[in-house]
Length: 456
Ligand SMILES: [Zn+2]
Image 1 (spheres, rainbow, N blue to C red):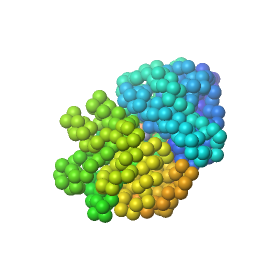
Image 2 (cartoon, rainbow, N blue to C red):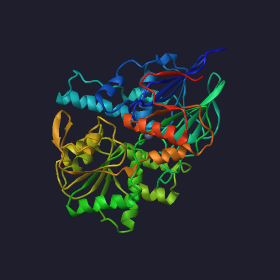
Image 3 (tube, helix red, strand yellow):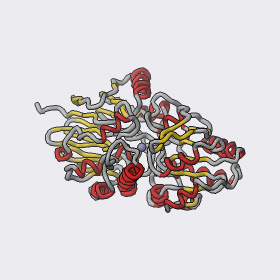
Image 4 (cartoon, rainbow, N blue to C red):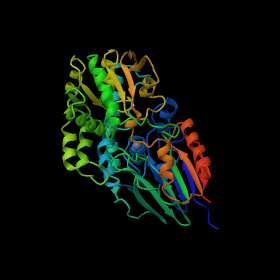
């Protein structure tokens, strides 16, 4: 008998970042997702060590969606020797073409800034990869339509299934000789105001499921109401609302909600600035991918016109010196990099302001520290006081909460032979594991980093 396939967990174990899985079967070495690690230093250091498999030995790749923690390591794998294509949906390809070069550019800028100011321990500070590496990776992307089986590798067939979450986001169903496996990707929400609900779960022998909010339930307050409250109480203090947001996804949701709230006169007519060239570009992609979101063309247009776009770095700096209340949206969503870091340096010390987080904050990030009540954060080697109000509206998240994950698992009667819970911090993954075992009666486990399991 031939050797059974093996599944290796090269990331998203004990963390929501660094999603990378390898399915090995016969000659095939198929990598699903290729994300960057973020947050705690010991995780980030993994981005710098040689990958657990030589890139030249990987025979095929596919991405569930474009978020950097699922795609941001691709430039390294390509630079270091992967020669094949990377299959993904059209929305993912389009967003990766924006996000990956931006990620390279940001790393180059951060390294250059660190060298200029001399605050890095590394001399010289180097980027993990640059814009040119990212462009090479983008050239490898190959679009595949949703719901259409395609050959991925030797004796392996792939199908992308809509997962809600963000534009182009998918679950990946892989059929190999003798079995099948479903990778949930990041599972969206049934009632997201922006994105469509995820498709029902597909039957498979094995399942890898995310658990970002595996131990939490989102507050059921309508997102519009919660957002209006934060904006209004900040406005009463004469302060500004500063929103760190992923360039793709939550930024667009905030624009949509702010526009609706203004039209209904539920918030004052404050200026709204979108200070992220990436988010600006991502917003316009909504016109082209109407099949994954809920907006009409007219609503897309309103969303695109709901803010003033800040492209120029000088205009971005000028926002920090004005004293007029505003709503300022800027990336990155966990305040790990990008222009938001500069804004926080200037605006976090002012107690009139609010810093509003709209998504999951991975452990070890500045975002997690602030949500956890840190009174100071370190930016560019200096401590910055956080006197502003810090709010986290998890109901704005693009991730299913624990109940919604269980409900999604129940959308198919077929029971997987084994389920692996990943993409969560340890408490979240373990809580979901327990619920799957107790409520669904499935065989389930939480794998560790670099575990390799045989799919018998
Ligand atoms: Zn995601």
